[in-house]
Image (cartoon, rainbow, N blue to C red):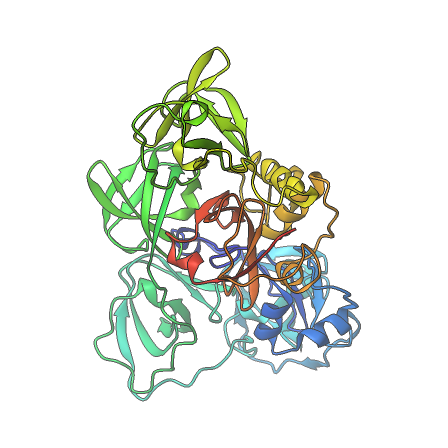
Length: 532
């Protein structure tokens, strides 16, 4: 589950450079094929059907879905009900608007007989719902109306009443004209950059426009500001994307353009080479603000990988020897496992490790690092994961029960996969990554804690992992943290606390760390904790 938009596609992928459409038919309106990021709730909102009805129509006993699964949107199976066929009224014929599949029968599940090239004239024989029977190249079959000109067949596209006053805008990039207000909708034509379109109405983040003889929908982001506002604009269906402060390091996975604003329509500032580490300080949708070689701008998160280094917190340095050699306090490891490095740098070689509750002998402290004794030599550990406690106090974390031991073991399992990508509905590393609840399921079962595979809402509301603890509760390593209103309303994301402020989780940009107090996005969405 994606905390920021679920599985989001980057703007770079949505508004790709000019595409020559290899058209295929849209799915029948009585079914829905599950895509990445879909939930029963989001499907119910899209198709105006209740979650209970979806479960009943598809014999579902849980909220779990699989990518590619076909759901009925009503109680009757669409495959057994065929719309009444009608004979087309004779006319001058229709013309294909894209390379178009001719199928054996009216439906995308039927065999493709031939692909008809774009621009070919066809004579309708019969219509059945959104499909038309035609002949071409010695074959007779069915094609979808959405890719025919409106001679005797009208495409099944929603009509929108134009405002009394139309305006003109220009495209700022090669822009897809779609049949409806969705990036999953069919592309009618790709409008070249710099072309003028007539804006009929503005509907949220989409504009209903006319280009040539075609009308459809385009994203507002890639249009210049209209000369005047249409007389009756429709109120936005979604709030504008809010820019939020973050503190996160990434590595580029390709040569990456830096732009003046969060979108491909903005001017280029510079280019960052593949494999470069950058630090992001702001996020706007799927774009983050970075600085490289003294130049700042926005880059797409689709080409970034979150680094594996956990955030650090400020630590007050001591004047000299501490730990076992200090008379007033001990230095105790405050995280499940901590690397000991050859020098004071996260890029330095790992020469060993220390574990939670272990007392360290500190030689000196400088710039956020403790130099400690390890075996017959010395090494360095990050001071932010070491706690100074009064001499003689309990060195192990409180609550050192079987539940705590398993929670710390679960953290160790999760850390093995830091940097792996977010994979929707995955609960096994064999799939290449995890979603957020899938990580919890895998890590805790590997650690010996038996828990079923379910979703965030059920983990939060059910009896799993103990009772609900409020967001004012001060968590410890091994506690579970729950968030709401990320990609969908209600409990929708979770992670494992590795200390009182930092958690590890499978997020939109992969498995990694975030700090609640430093990141408003997470701080504002915490709903509570659980202690296994």
